Length: 196
Length: 248
Image 1 (cartoon, rainbow over the protein chains, first blue to last red):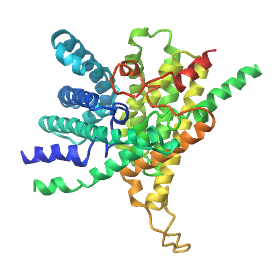
Image 2: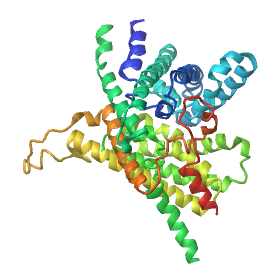
Image 3: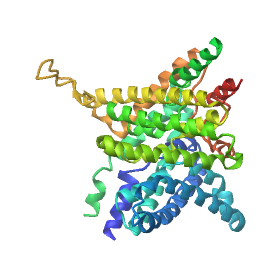
Image 4: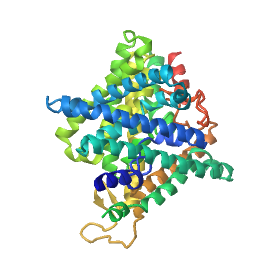
């Protein structure tokens, strides 16, 4: 249990996917203008990350590795993720219209999101067990949500600030992201201390 | 003939300067921020991407009439993922140092939007030779951008360049007491340096009456993004105009 908590909180705070690993920067910069879309987008990311891990981990451990096909990891994983997103979209549309309205439009965006492929590969690289992998993916998604929600607040302030013309838009957003990243840097080493 | 050659040089130079994928189109932000901690990593990532980009453009322009329009994106992704696997195996075998330095960002070249963007916007509409030239130009442009950013971060952040200890001097000669700005090699420094460079690019481009891309221009899923409330507006920017110009 303690081990699970360390994995969960490390990936949310210390090794935050957006601010420390630089995965999923496009949606972080693109869809962080208002809180509603930021939360829905992150919800879809959490869902897809956990689902993708639940499917890719068994495929790698029981199918690829025993047959010495580990090098096919990249091709198989991206195909599985793309196919899974399509299937989830169809299921949502048919059976869960409420969830489809909330998350549906974000699902196709996520297929080519490097954070999803990234988390499935990292789970294998870190040789996590199935349960640890699921916790790691959930934490990665939650960390993404935390970064998004915090950053929406920051961006609302930037929108009202008077900036030098050259910094207007993307450059100011990036510099603000740097400051948020410094804040997250403060968590380094803290998680091990809490659960020691 | 002369006219033809001129336009080919134009396609090649286009990716290096006018439509630089990282600095003007703002594509492939994740690797640009993540692996630019040292000049060696920057060059390594650039060359790996260049390889994948040239061959994906080659194969996709060869296959453009065979691949049905509806399944083109998955088909492109399979071609790209196959090429990335080749690069992964080559790097693991011959440059293991680079393999451990780039880590997860090597397999993630698969989802680097520069490659899918060029496949969609250029290779699927142009001749084989032009597509390869476009791949070479874009790849060199990406490599140069990574090299510039990583050199700044390595020199000012760590005081080294390609591992050479610049500030300590060689054998104690030229010894200096200049302190480095350690934060530049951390994630926060990556965002900061990239932000400042983007501001510079935005200034230069505005002098010429152009503007920065918003990173979405080449994204294959941008059409679904247009419905997303609060997302940055996506207009027909750089990537589209280039594709249109090239077609004519």
